[in-house]
Length: 274
Ligand code: C2E
Ligand code: CA
Ligand code: CA
Ligand code: CA
Image (cartoon, rainbow, N blue to C red; front, side, top):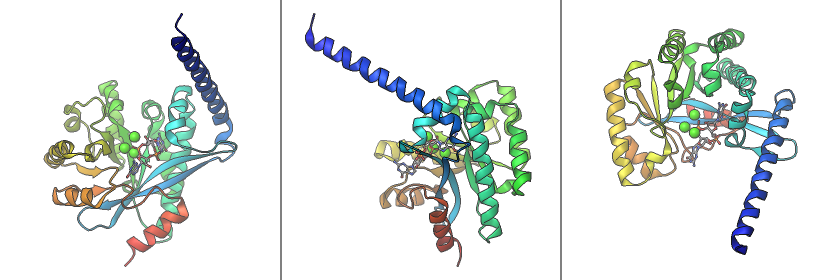
């Protein structure tokens, strides 16, 4: 037997069981996390390429785990998807983000809020009911609410997808296609479904080849009458390129990290009011 191989194998199985334990741990902790108020929404601004004004904010969930500290969404959203806990969590996100939208509105800051919707939530029969209940509960203007879905969610039963999107759209809610270009891309659905916004994944902002693709996506957005938002904008050079090439909105660390309510409220006050 080769020692090197055995060692590698053992290490790998240790890592794997650690991962599984980790996952089970988080899975268990998720059960009480909503009840214990361990979640918080951060908000990241979106900026107009034309006026440089704030055009909206995206709600991004954070988990303050009692012993692990801050757990990023990429570490628990997929677990919550697998266990179905995402439904409860997703409802909390709808509730809290609409409450915040309304609170800002009452304080004179009327700003659209974008909410990430998970696959499970999108496919659930009560999505429409949950969304409309929250709108009524908080008295939010549907036009101020944007739901972000991803490409893979459009691949299910076409009639059902179409019905869901049309119902949301008929309520006056805006629909954004998130992470555009990273998944299975079938351009037909851009025309078929009532989408309002394309959010281009930050992978397309990299080198020149990607900038060329980005140009094509911007043209396509224009032709289809969709607003195009560039995600992950980090440099002045990227900003300049996007402004020159007719992108509509930008979002990224160049302008701001996602911020807790107090921080984003200060940001909104300094950039939204004259
Ligand atoms: P996303 O919806 O694509 O969100 C954008 C992610 O990119 C966020 O990570 C954001 O913090 C990060 N980001 C923003 N600007 C920049 C930048 O300039 N450079 C870089 N490198 N990153 C940037 P975050 O907050 O960790 O969220 C990760 C993902 O978790 C989100 O990706 C979304 O898919 C999911 N997620 C977050 N909040 C929720 C939620 O409330 N519900 C659901 N279902 N998913 C959520
Ligand atoms: Ca998003
Ligand atoms: Ca995205
Ligand atoms: Ca993403």
